[in-house]
Length: 345
Image (cartoon, rainbow, N blue to C red; front, side, top):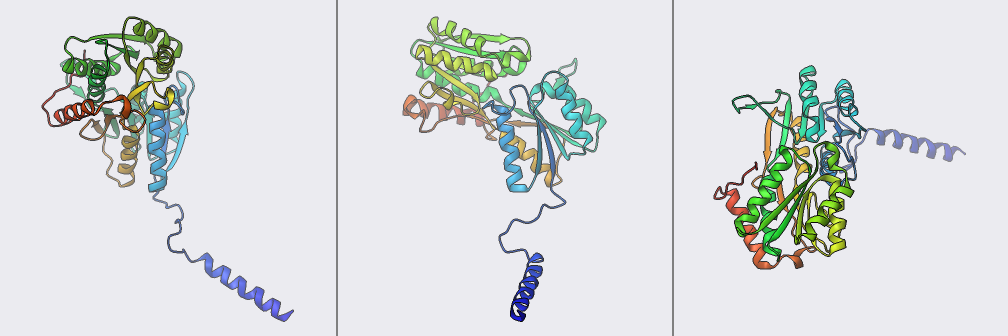
């Protein structure tokens, strides 16, 4: 019995000692310096296989690599978006992120109300004054913007080089300036490699609901395919799911947007014009973590790896080596300033 008591006592001593030892390579406890991040998703929310999912991936990476503590809010309609941002700001988050242009006005207002909180807006819409000069966002607000026209230029060139009918299509979601950037770049890319090609462009609507109407997307895409189009690029959120369905139904090709959308229609997705939303969100969180966050406009284009197109084992059989080489030369020409891609119609 005495030996048993001695053994138990020894084990207790070892246990107490181990409480104060941090084994080499073990995860350290959460630091008080860990950055607290709140993210409010746009229409479509998680699982959109587009920029909401991109924002999620960037935040998850920050959690893994920097110990960031992230809270996600997936709002419903209308004012829920503003109330979600306000809730996070009131809770004292170090950084509050709104995903999507629709948050622009709310982020601008809240940044003024909470000057000690950092804010960031993915696809933030920068305003201009009557003289056309850019009105900068508040000093604690980072506008995370992308040069969508550059990536769209490349997939436009690809559509024209791969297509055989000299007719290509574009299906946009909401008819407004941000999506016009996709359309303008796409048309410029088509015309660069095929001046006599025709581009048929259509939009699903004039409100944010146009980004989640797969039925309308399918209707527009079927109409274009029936007119002789054999490749359609969509920039329409979940409305594009209808475009993919039309591509499958007609045995034609479609081009995805924002993220790699190959899985939506394997064999019928020529490529996707991808945006590095994950990298932009991660960078914003890192700047807060490292105490070097500054408001302003941050542009992510081809040179910064902010946009691009997918080329991998899934679609390489659809893109001949000569076409791939042509696209890469166009990419270099844009980065080095030999090609200036338009961002407006």
